[in-house]
Amino acid sequence: MIEIESNVNLKQLNTMALASIAEYYCAVHSVAELTEAIDFAQREALALHILGEGSNTLPVSHVSGLSCRVALKGIEIVQDSQDTVILRVASGENWHQLVAHTVNNRWWGIENLALIPGAVGAAPVQNIGAYGVEIADVLLAVEVFDLQTLTQRTLSKAECELSYRESTFKGNDRGRFVILQVLLELSKIAKPVLSYAGLSELAVLADREALSASRVAERVIELRSAKLPNPTELPNSGSYFKNPIVARSVADSLLENFPQAPHWVVGQEVKFAAAWLMDQCGFRGTELAGGFQPYHLQALVMTNPKGGSYRDLLRAETEVIRTVASRFGITLEREPQLLG
Ligand SMILES: Cc1cc2nc3c(=O)[nH]c(=O)nc-3n(C[C@H](O)[C@H](O)[C@H](O)COP(=O)(O)OP(=O)(O)OC[C@H]3O[C@@H](n4cnc5c(N)ncnc54)[C@H](O)[C@@H]3O)c2cc1C
Image 1: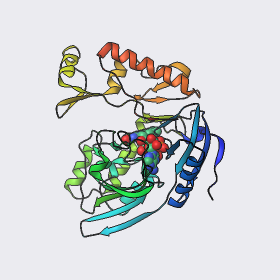
Image 2: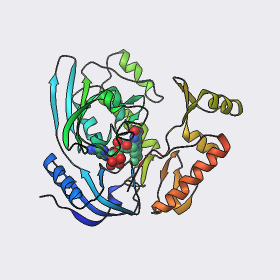
Image 3: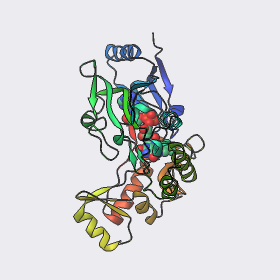
């Protein structure tokens, strides 16, 4: 029997440390326990909310329904060939510990994604990415529990519809699937991705075949630790806004006035750096409603040093979105998901 608690404070269960009361809360460690949680929610006519480690989740002040943390564990090799290895990883495994496990085994593919907080099951939800790599680059499939049909099934990578910080789990199929397992294909042959500033210096080692996946991961950890606040010391949810992607015509008129704006062409569209837009509006390090503060080293990271509330956060967010929109004509979009 799973333990279902009522009136649980979620403050320790979201890295923004928002105080929030969940009507009901449970953690599930197996599909059988998940089924019990689903039965309970159905019986009591409750909404079911799925949680990983809460590093990309902003709970509202009172979350009605059953908040359910998915805590399935296990890493298994399902195929081991000369050049590749296929892993089946349970959704409750910690992502960074998985990266550590893979680089220790000299497998390549997710070393650039070291130190991203959160659980493995949440990784496909927003197609986590950093330093030129996304989980889409190594994902083969995900095994899910379909809350519509109450059956388990496998979704191919194509069915996950992964794109920049997006997937079907955040889009058309939001709330439909509980991710149980993730299948990843990693390489035993060196495949370093060193294009990102700060990693390119490792190319010398790559040329001499002296570079390991763990060396790349170590460098990523150094770079991230130098510019991102540790949520256990300074509450935050990582990047608060997505880098906006706009039509060429919008980009052209913006670049006419701000030719120095950092941007990247993505197919027919253009992506701008949200942090730069916020910097130009003077938000970096500025205290907003409730003490929320865009981090002084990286404006995109909204921090919560004074224990601000969800309501304060929305006020802070609105101020940033309105100011950036009136200066640049671009509407920033929040990256973390609301809970409740
Ligand atoms: C300091 C910091 C740095 C960060 N850096 C990055 C970065 O570089 N790149 C990046 O992409 N992200 C980054 N993030 C965001 C975050 O780490 C990722 O989005 C991570 O995948 C969230 O994992 P989680 O377990 O905490 O998810 P949660 O916050 O618990 O959940 C996020 C969403 O996924 C859903 N979900 C969770 N588990 C499951 C499941 N098993 N089945 C179905 N749905 C599920 C939830 O319902 C929710 O909608 C950062 C966050 C922080 C705090």
